Image 1 (spheres, rainbow, N blue to C red):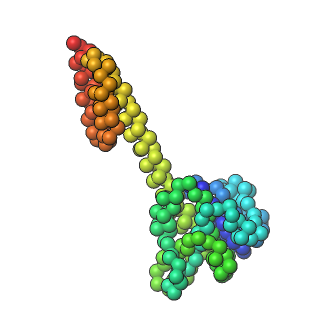
Image 2 (image 1 turned 45 degrees about the vertical axis):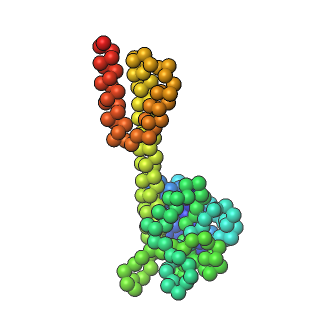
Length: 229
């Protein structure tokens, strides 16, 4: 999944710099600024502190509407309105939802510090998300909100990568076991038995991680004894 962060009309350079830093800490890089030049102010550079590359590579746009066609999903971050017919997803719920859309190009959209996203901008978005807060506590600062989403989405992306690495490792173990099974058949002189070979290889492909490890040990013992014989 390709993930971008869009700041619509940010007013304070410090918030843009802090947002860039938030992206960098979680491994994200695309920050888009709409209808603002706050990122060009020196204060943005000071606050970015180590994320100057994200700041330097900021893309700009005149309006959120001009970016609409670039993304499969635009996610609006906004205060939860209980009277609204929209479903509002917490950052954690959003991360889980987006995990099921690995091929999508997604952007998380943040409004300006004073008033958030306009109704026009909200109407352009596909999903709504909010950060649950205690009671009537004031809303988060713009940069703080960006950090919350960067953290949640970054953690979910890390989990997906670990899962893919484990899946890859399991696949390598499966292929290695298949080769050892073929080697064992050759040692036993029945490598020409195509029906048995296919039955064994199909069985190996269906084994779980624990069974694959046990099968490796068993086949290793067989190979050891047949080699001695």
